[in-house]
Image (cartoon, rainbow, N blue to C red; front, side, top):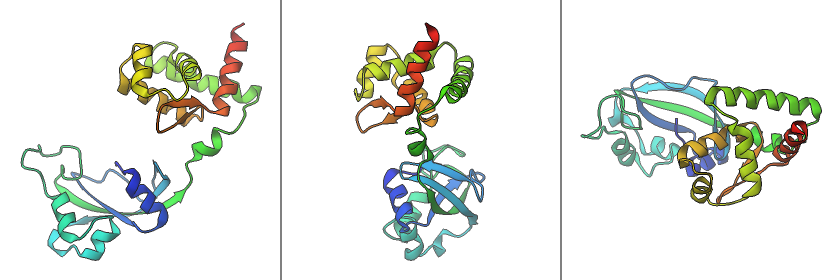
Length: 206
């Protein structure tokens, strides 16, 4: 479920408490959480909406929309969209998802933790799984590149590495989930945790 940064910030502030999506079946579960640009969001209720005409302006504003007409328009299937296509107006049914802010992004604290020998071995085991799953020793190569090219525009970094942009960004998100990198408005850099781990890898290789 895609949640934009402006909406995520409003969820955090408590001014947005619901979202609406057109899906064939619910894609989130009550009690589940999702990481957003403003931290963790928890889903508290998922209910099917059978009559869009009953949506109120109050309900629309709780979803971050101007009024009920704007919300209904956003939920109206597009003529050229195939049934079941991804997106707010792509499924057969409309669902209201009640949600709340559940806390800070856990990666923020994790990236500041400096791993000891045992923790570095654990991280190495997890990056080895990623290497095996996706092929090659890309995890260390990516960390090396970020370390040598901090806060370089992602398009430029991809060009320098000779790789496609979107797969590279996906790889970096996987490393970010381990607390090893920091994303900036422009480019990336190693987190304190990532810098210690990369130094450990270098020493282990000698």
